[in-house]
Length: 313
Image (cartoon, rainbow, N blue to C red):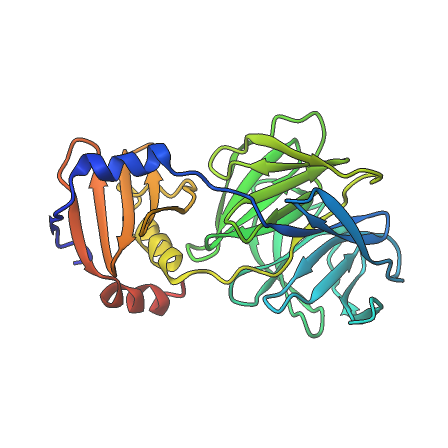
């Protein structure tokens, strides 16, 4: 059995307090944004933009992505490019995706794409640009994908934020609405575990569990953001792999509608508001608590992590 509870020494109230007091900061995040063929680096702290490149490609740039090394990839309706050190675009190939407009890397180096005219989720070979259908989205893409805490998010048509579970038969669902009068064309994760979105000249923080947004900054002098990318693709933490495995294995306890990972002191945790459950890791131990119940330790992370990685998380 995955769960063999025994009581934790800490009080339940102390664990519940984590969800009430912890916050996710965006200080120090850097992102790439593209507008009308210009790729710029955004410093969220300084609220500044620096031109990185104006690459020559076959038509309009529809999105950008970065791998874990920080290499930029450029998507057009027809092709995939890699940005060289001098800012020039190196053609990798034709991807064959009709009206491709969304691109992102996951935490393991896989590249995903989506289309404005169908609901397919594609995996793209970053060396050859060859694309393969690997799943279905609940809506056509408005313009971007983002990977956060081991889950894939997408900005869908009709102002919607969606989520795809890449390790559970590619199941996808709508999370909620951004609450904007326009489509969101940019979506990216920051190093601070924050999900960002962009529409026209606005950059905003996105609540990944509801889709609601909070304003961060204006892109002064920018025409319209046409894609966002992280400074580097964020490699999925082992703790998040374990959390995702627990969510998929026990959905009634850890409801798999997205719960962001947060830090409080030496605890890394997720709070599941629908079930009143906290799943946390501290001092190498995996534990959980339900509101009104006694906290329980499940065991050592080293015991359960091989189960998660063996299942593809």
